[in-house]
Image (tube, rainbow, N blue to C red):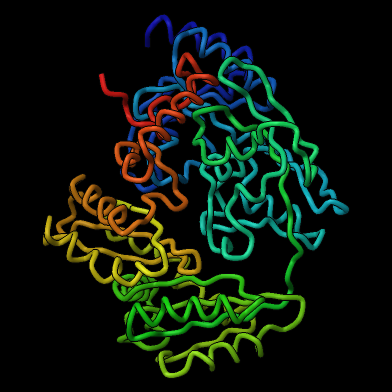
Length: 462
């Protein structure tokens, strides 16, 4: 280890203590690889501050050493945005795990950036309130990371993405100064809205330490249905109809044929309905009163396009339907290391995209499989490309998929962010003027390029 790193390590140890400055390669390895195994980096130091003051001191010391930081929460990202691919110092927020008392009058809560989603959900549950965003990675994803990536999940249809939940923010800037505005006022037109700026910034502008979140009333009565369709077009049209006719609609998820059969095999359970269908919707309605009649009537109105229906009204039967959606990522990962491409299409282009994408991929490499699922209620499709020979798909495949998305007027990133995986494709969705504005903001807040300098923005032409 270089004298520079050793000296920095000694200084950081005085801030966070011996147990929270990790240098041994065996201890830092878990912070240097994303959970899919696709992105693998290295770091000389992992620092785990306990509070905002310690984190600010850490940032100052790393900046003085002329080194860069990768902020990391639960390390559940899928685009390489929280992995030290260029040997950066990792600053982990996992110890920023304070949950403040729920403000029941305002229906808000202030949480530390390192609080996991499931901890947050459990913390507010006794107040009969819920966090507006829910993800399958709830056991490990953190509030700070969810804000930094503007996470979406299964309830965007009803509550919006993470940006819509954030009413206040505390964060450490690249020079170690702290911004804190946690009052949570619903109306506050006193300048730039920093929570919105930091949401989706992927740790490039500041490191979030605390956040004030809007909460929502717990809806105690739920009904879940699985609907099978013989065509993707029918599933898309049914989603539109359900959004119009079911006020209590809480989620509309989708699995397409290959993904459904893969997850069924993985969990050792038969396809529950319509085995030879092309698409399956998992639809959930929730309310204070029983939404079963409302949902059932809307499904009846869809008519013959619905091949078959399965309904869950109790916890066990609902969980049985949801497992096909929640375990599909696990099923894909068990088969290999996928290239994950998270995209959004307009409703009028969804069927075309789903139908044509396998041909787009096979034209480049016939030994690849494509598994698709996602949040059909907001047009978000998760594309997973796996090599059948056990290898890795070519980067050319990523380019082909994202270029096809852009051609259809879609977004190359719905909810996973840009990270390192997609930064060279940012021009497909953002103009030169927009990217230049992004760079100006980054330079203004982080002129020394201390915070996550290798993500989001493509390298400037020399």
